[in-house]
Length: 179
Image (cartoon, rainbow, N blue to C red; front, side, top):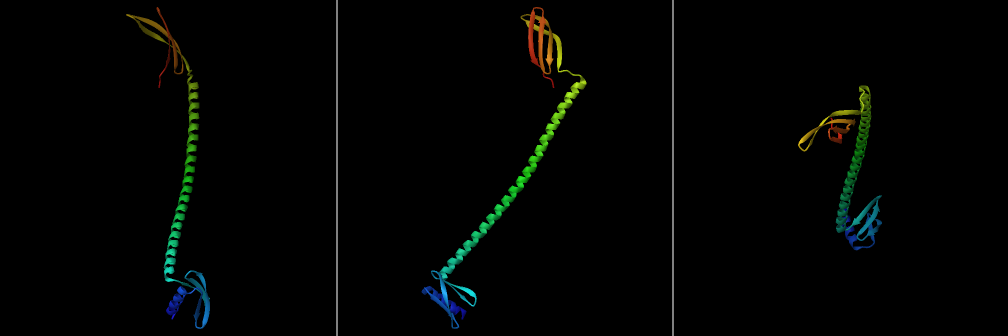
């Protein structure tokens, strides 16, 4: 009986603009939802009458909409994962930068302590950055070799010397290379 009513309703739906649905003497006016589509209420339930071709189109649209919703849901899940990873990266980066700042601070303290220890060692050893140098130099002028005395003054690695000899005078400036 239900199939007969459905077939009858379907055939009526395709041909009519206004549709009245009846069962057991009860008649209900169907509302038009557009071309080849109606709805009506019977015993508290809502029923729809749709042409078969339109039903296929609606099923296709529903499937496309479902696939789109699933794709958007997957995309949102990817965005959530990406935002979570970015947040984790930021916290790891912040901890790394904090540790690097601590390393730099420790390095500066060690450098200052080493310089202070060096100054204290110099003071304890009584070392002076100035020193006097002396020695002998040999100079060749043509075929003859001349001997000259050397007197100099050094400040840390810089050295200045005066060379004095028989018939020879000179000045030299140098840099001491010491480990």
